[in-house]
Length: 374
Ligand SMILES: Nc1ncnc2c1ncn2[C@@H]1O[C@H](COP(=O)(O)OP(=O)(O)OP(=O)(O)O)[C@@H](O)[C@H]1O
Ligand SMILES: [Mg+2]
Image 1: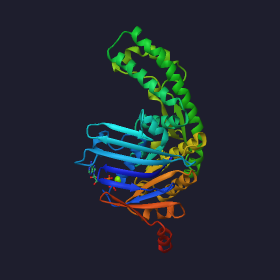
Image 2: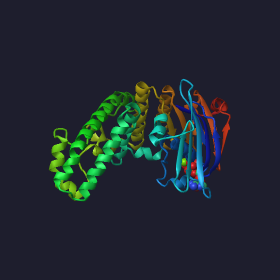
Image 3: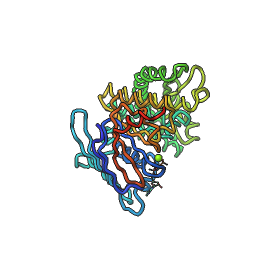
Image 4: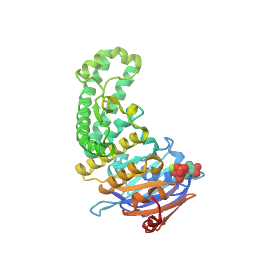
């Protein structure tokens, strides 16, 4: 599904913005503090019912207002149209309607809209702990594997119960009741994640070999417990340490995607710009796999791209997204930074200033380029 019409009301400095986006590229430009990220934040909200900026949802609601509302009309490749309405007030009530029916959960939204966000924070994917890399694998599985979400929820519930029992320092016999179920779910989650990472790998590798031909960038999936030991035995052996820690050490909650260049950790070897290219390669590979396996098109939100990626990687990313037929929203302070990459693409341009969004004529991009000196 792609956005066909979007109405944003009372989000940050935006009183109201109405967009009729292009099904391909949408370029939003304007000065610092004008509302560019707030627009992407609103689009992201349609797919997640939460912000990527703040865990406190009320911060998104425009000051001195009691609620924000978001409305969108989505359209599928076979012209099927679906409406989504979201209303969130200062008392934390959130109402989500899909086709005017109350949604059962946020997963319903996420299923409709596979949104990939690339912003300055996403470039920490490689430098921080394993959580965002695990989330990347789970995101892919959520969209390609129908029953994965319920399996993932079961894992979270079971882990929570086991950790609670550990915190209460319950005797081993009582904790091991959870272990049986935990191990069964862990094996299933591991199987799915391993399979996903194997399928993603050739796509990732093709992109990487093109973008970073001189660096042997590779990844392997690590399941969160030793390759040659049964999880059940590890849980039994680590009972005392786990009760000391108050949480379960071994299990799929520690799974990771370990990236390397040759024998060296990626961070020690690649420049910051090259690391960013690796992050983009992972996301492009995911969108390719999603398109191939589930016939779903991803929506890419690229915040402040020119300041994050150099011309060469930026052009590669944009050309790949063009080939993938993804709907893309890009922001930048300056128009110039993206002209060259977008010149031969289907693009709509929007200018935003002090929270007011206006579509502008994009046909003059080629004319400007004729006189420009690149
Ligand atoms: N709850 C709120 N109510 C009203 N205004 C807000 C609220 N939260 C943030 N703002 C303001 O909204 C404006 C838009 O912020 P936003 O981050 O979208 O700008 P931007 O165009 O992405 O800027 P930059 O180019 O610096 O990234 C900022 O001036 C900010 O102070
Ligand atoms: Mg911004």
